[in-house]
Image (tube, rainbow, N blue to C red; front, side):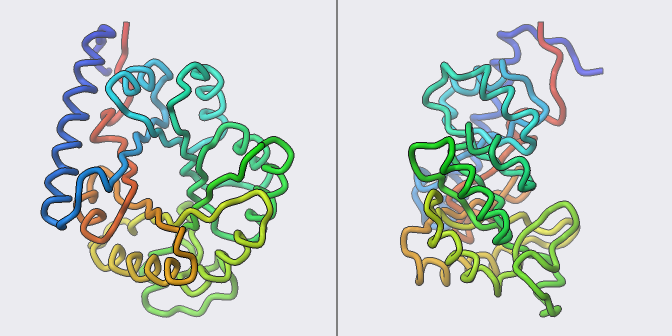
Length: 255
């Protein structure tokens, strides 16, 4: 069982974790010849309660990432007073959840098929007064790297991880650009499990360069997590999605 913490102890724990993560990011940026402020830290808060998000906000975290609509929408409703907090939806998204997600999300990172573009565009048009920034999720699986033939933008993805094949990214980008209520912000990817992430992040950098050549404003690259953030920074990540290194392996009991 997780140790029971007081609120002040949990705040101190999060503060120490955040300092360690920021130090890693600074070191990674220095090694890559980048400025630390060129990288945004997204705190991945799935399974952690709203009070932890309040604590993170008090420590200067301005971006949080959630994977499941059922959990995210409850937290967003509870924390409406934190007006400076940006909500990033980073989980796989079904079309029937689009209307819910567009109500609170400031960014959606996992657009991987034209049907989802259409669903988000229609939903955003109903409930938002400004365009919704979206990122295209790229499939970096070894199958894609080996050139396995695919038949559509989301074919060949890793089960449960999603992503469009790199060869379909520009076509998917055009679908977003043609939409009325979405804005193309950049790319997102998850390194494949169980293999060296370096080749995957190198592929992502190539895809990002091709996208920016066609769409210069699509500058976001959401990549890197607790275990591989240094490599992600080296290959151009602008947004890091960090959960375990920041919040711990599972929620602490707090009194």
